[in-house]
Length: 426
Image (cartoon, rainbow, N blue to C red; front, side, top):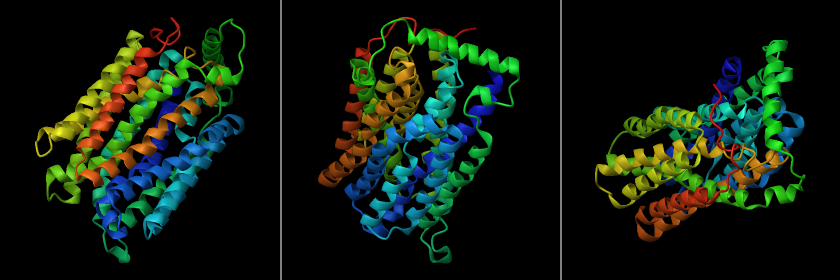
């Protein structure tokens, strides 16, 4: 398992960093792009909505293609096309061209997140999966911290070679995804049986452990149709919980730069980048401890509910304590709660209590597709409410309410004893 962690985690972490950069850098670019392109808050929110529209439409087909053609080929394709499309955002000249390009970025990225989660089930037994997933997902807050600082510096290139700073931002931050896509093609192995870096004995041990998990998860009950496996109470509740969580994560990525700029007044882009990076770094520190705590105790629901409700409290502070230094504390609390909930949540669809192995490829993609609608509508709703009221308070209250709904959905899940919450093996 040490070899597997060393071989797999760093590359999926790096891929997540590159993909998340190209998904979320519009939040920082908006500080000047909105003025240059004549975007209102709702127009800017729409640019994120169309990204997720393309993402959602292609999510399940992409994940099925990964299962068919293998991770090495399909993830390489995803990364290369993400980077090309994201860099092309620099060519936007108005709201409609921005919408079209961001829709292409969403289509390119479709299948990446659930595809990596599916890929990790090929390598990590379930008693190691929450830790591996937490390490993978730590890329999101680290990327926010790193890119916030880097984006502040790139935005300072405004006017270089006649290009606006936000155009340099998209151009330079799209290139790493292309390079990593080439690395993936030569580096990743589809399954343990293909791994030359494992000895025959190590392959057999890992395959036996994974087979043991599959045997336990499959059980002895009658086989059911794919439709009946996916159209059930737990899948619906998982999708609802993911929807609320993604609403929060999307709001954090899209609107935090503008919230922090309002708190910090006339701060420079470089200082804004540092202030945005601090909450993300705290998320990065907290996520592995929360994931390890869940694994050690063999407990998922309470770890998830606590994180969701803590995040909801943070959003209410941001919404209703504007002009106060406590608002920045709310930014920190909302981010830490949401990011700590993320790996705990995604350990659930990968368990047999939620999705049996034969339904997992389509099931993870289906749950993620429904949940990701939260990222599609969240920026639009917050933007419309901001344009209507002149305040972020109603929109951020909506985010807090959706996190509370997620916590309720987790409470209503039905777990099969011994499957979803088995303690970590020693």
